[in-house]
Amino acid sequence: MELTKRQQDILDGKEGDVKAKIMKTLIMYGETFGSERMVDITGKYGHLVTSFGLSVMKPVYELMDTLIDGGAVSAQCFSVDPRPCDKNVPKNFIQDIFFRVMYSKQDDYDAQLRKLGIMNDDAYTCTCYMNEVGNIPKEGDILSWAESSAVVYANSVLGARCNRNSGILDLFGSIVGCVPYFGLLTDEGRKADWLIEIKTTRRPEAQLLGSAIGMKVMENVPYIVGLDKYLPSLDDEAKAYLKDFGAATASNGAVGLYHVENLTPEAKKQGRSLLKEGYKTFVIDDAVLEETERNYPVIWKDKNAKPKLAFIGCPHLSYAQLEDWSDRIDGALKSKGLKKVSVKTVLTAAPKVLERFKGTDKEKKLLDAGVIISYICPLMYMNNPQCASMPVITCSNKLRTYTSARYFKEEDILEMITGGRR
Image 1 (cartoon, rainbow, N blue to C red):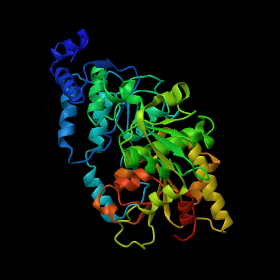
Image 2 (tube, rainbow, N blue to C red):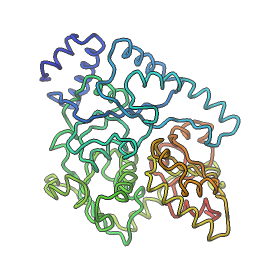
Image 3 (cartoon, helix red, strand yellow):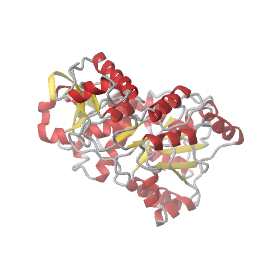
Image 4 (tube, rainbow, N blue to C red):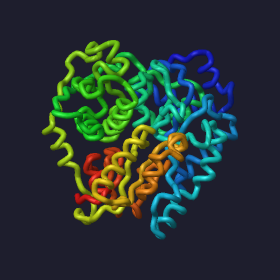
C-alpha cells in the first residue's frame, strides 16, 4: 500500500509501538478490500459503536487500557452509541439483577471513553448527527465511523463518505487520522447498482420501505425514484423519515448508502448518472410492502400474548418526532376517554435532545400519560435472555431484526398502546 511520509512514520513506530500496530491493522484491513492507499479523515468528530460495558468484553477493556497507556488517544473527539441501562425503564427483579451483572463494567468503560476522547458525557446516541448533539459531518467529509444507521445517514443524507466499519476499527481510524481508501469512499463505489421505483398509493412507512429495499439490494447501493413525491424537500421531517428508512435498509440488508432522486445531495447534483451500467430495477407498490410485513417471523413463545412493553425510537427520535408522538398519543387517549397508555411505552432519544425537550408542555403530556422517556439503546435492553422472552412491540425494523421484538406500523402501535386491540 502506498503511504504518505506521516503514515509511514507511524507504521515505523515513530509515534510509538501502539500507533504502529494500529496503522498495520488498518493497512491489513484495507488490503483485504483492495485498497492501495490511505486517505486522511476530514470530519471533525468520530463516532464509535461500542458503548456498552458488557462484563464479557474483557479483551476490549484491555485494549482500551493499552491505547490509553500508550498515549494512543483519539486525534478527534467522538460520540458513541447509546448507553444500555436506565433505571426509569421498567425491569422486574430478576431482570434488574441480570442487567447489573451483564453491564457491570459500564462505569469503568465510561471512564475509558472519557480518557480516549468522547465529546462529553451526553454524547451517547446512535443519532449523533442531530443538531442538539452536534456531530454533523459536511458533504464530502471522510469519516471513521461505525454504527450502521449513523453511517448510512452520513453517507446518504449528509453526503459524507464512510465505509461500514466495525467496532474498534472506527476508533483506530480516529486515533491515526486516516482510513483505507475503498468502497463508499470512492466515486465509483458510490454509484448505484439498483433503480428502485416507488409506486405506492400513499407515503410508505419509512421503516417498512427501508426493510423491503434492504432485503432486496443487501449491500448494494440503491437509487430511489418516486419518494420525492412524498418528501419534496430535505427539511427536518424528511431527515427524520430518512433516518428511520436508512436504519431499516442497513439492518434488514447491509446498505451503507442510498440516493433519493431530487432529494439527497449527490442525487440532486448528479441525477441518474449515478446509476451503474447494467443496473437492476425493483418496483415497490402497496402489495410489495404488504407482503414484506406479512412475511416477518413472529418468534414470541405465545404469538397471541398481550404486549408488556412498547419501544419507539430505534434509532433515537428527533425532537420533532418526540413532539409528534406526544400529540398523537395525547389525541388518541382523549378520543377514547383515557388518561394513561395501556401498554408500558418507552420513547428514546439522545440525551441532548431530551435535555431540550425537558420541561415542555409536550413532555408533560407524555409523562402524564404514563410514557417513559429515556436515552437508552432499546436493542441493548432487549438483547438478553431475560428481556427476549417478553412480548415487546415496536415500530422499529432494526429492533425487530436483532431482537425478539415484534414489528407493527406506527398507526398500529399507536392504537395498541392507547387501549386498542391488536
